[in-house]
Amino acid sequence: MDKKILFLFFFCITLHLAAIVSAQLQVGFYNTKTRCPAAETIVRDTVRSRFSSDRTITAALLRMYFHDCFVRGCDASLLIDSKNTKNKKSEKDAGANGSVREYGLIDQIKSKLEATCPNTVSCADIIALATRDAVALAGGLNYSIPTGRRDGLVSDPSQVNLPGPSITVPQAIQTFQSKGFNVNEMVSLLGGHTVGITHCGFIQEDRLSRDDGSMDKNLFTSLRKTCSANGGSSVFLDQNTSLVVDNSFYKQLKLKKGILKIDQLLESDRSTAGIVTTFSSNPNAFQQAFANALIKLGNTQVLVGKSGEVRKNCRAFNPPPVRSSNPFLFVFGPQA
Ligand code: HEM
Ligand SMILES: *[C@@H]1O[C@H](CO)[C@@H](O)[C@H](O)[C@H]1NC(C)=O
Ligand SMILES: *[C@@H]1O[C@H](CO)[C@@H](O)[C@H](O)[C@H]1NC(C)=O
Ligand SMILES: CC(=O)N[C@H]1CO[C@H](CO)[C@@H](O)[C@@H]1O
Image (cartoon, rainbow, N blue to C red; front, side, top):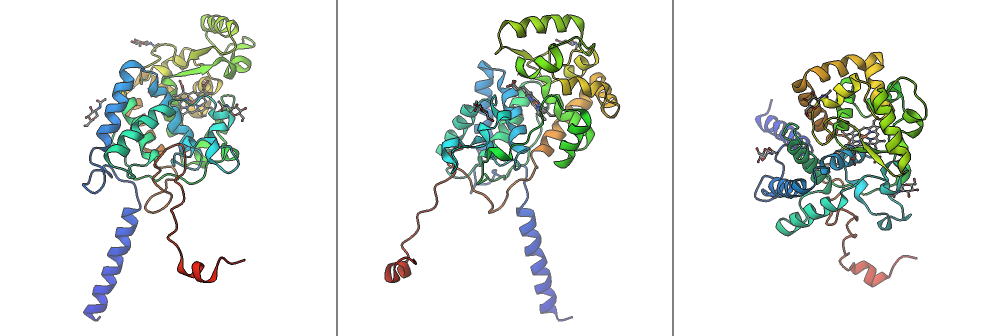
C-alpha cells in the first residue's frame, strides 16, 4: 500500500482515538498548567475546614452526589435555583430533594476556585471531589476520582424520579440496574446510610405505625417516642456510629436496627442478605466496594469534552454569550 495513504490512515485513527480519550473522565484532569493544578487541594481544604466544625457534611454531600448523579447524570443539575429556569422550577423543588443540604458549601468551594482559575472547574466535579474528601475525613477510603465532568443545561423537577424509602428490594434492584449498577453495587451504595439522618416522616408509616417484628423492640420504642414528640424530628440512619463511614450500618441491619424500610429489607431479601452479611463481618470488603461504587456512581451519564458548560455560578446556567453584532443583520434587518 502507498506509504502516504498508510500514514494518513494511522494519523486519522490516532486523531480519532485522541478524541475518544479526551472525551472521558480522567484522574487528575485539572492537574495541568493550563487547567487548575490547585483544584483538588482547594476543594479538600474547604471541605476539611467545614468538616472540623460540622461532621454531618459527609452525609449531606453523599446524598447530594447520589441525587445529582441519578437524575440526568452527574451534571450538577440539582444545584440550579428554581428562579433560573424557564418554568421557575428546578430539580431542587422536587419532593425527593426537599432535604438535600449544603448547597452553600458548594458555593463556597466554587467561589474559591473561580478566584484561582476562573471558568475551569465544573460544579459537577466539585460535588464528586467534595464527596470523596468528606468520605475520607469520616473514615472511608481516600479514593482517586476521575474528573472532567461538565455542567448540564437542564434542571427539570419532572425528571426527578428517585426511589422512595418504601420501595421493595426488587424495585430497588430494577432502579439501580437501569442506571448500570448490579445488586452488589446497589447494596454497597446504600451503605451511604452509614451516615446521616432521616426525618421521622419517612419511617412513620412503614416502620413505626405498628410492631411487625422487623425492628428491634427497644429501638422501636425509642423511635416511636422521638418521632411522636415532634413531627419534624429526625433520627440517625446508623444508630451506632452515626457520623462514621464504616460497616456498622450492615451490623445494625443484622440486629434489626435498620431505620428505613428499604435498608432493613436488604437484610432479609434473598438477593441481598448474603451481601449484607459479608459487609457486616468484613470492614475492608465494605470500604473497597463502597469506594468503587462511588467512583462508578460518578461516571453516570456524564457530559464531557465540549458538551454542557462549566458554570460560573453553580446555582445558575451561564448567560448566553453576547452575540458579536452581525453585519448581515445590520444591513438587512432581522428576519420577520
Ligand atoms: C433505594 C435507594 C435510596 C433510598 C430509597 C434512599 C432514601 C433516603 C431517605 C428517605 C433519606 C432521608 C432524607 C431526609 O429525611 O432528609 C435518605 C438520607 C440519606 N441518603 Fe439515601 N436513599 C437511597 C440511596 C442512597 C444512596 C445511593 C446514597 C449515597 C451513596 C444515599 C445517601 C444518603 C445519606 C448520606 C442520607 C443522609 C442525609 C443527611 O443526613 O442529610 N442514599 N435516603
Ligand atoms: C487523601 O489523599 C490526599 C493526597 O494523597 C491527601 O493530601 C489528603 O490529606 C488525604 N485525605 C485524607 C482525609 O486523608
Ligand atoms: C458499634 O460501634 C463500636 C465502635 O464505636 C464498634 O466497636 C461496634 O462493633 C459497633 N457495634 C455494632 C453492633 O455495630
Ligand atoms: C424544600 C423544598 O423545596 N421542598 C419542596 C419539595 O418539592 C415539593 C413538591 O414536589 C414541594 O412541595 C416542597 O416545598
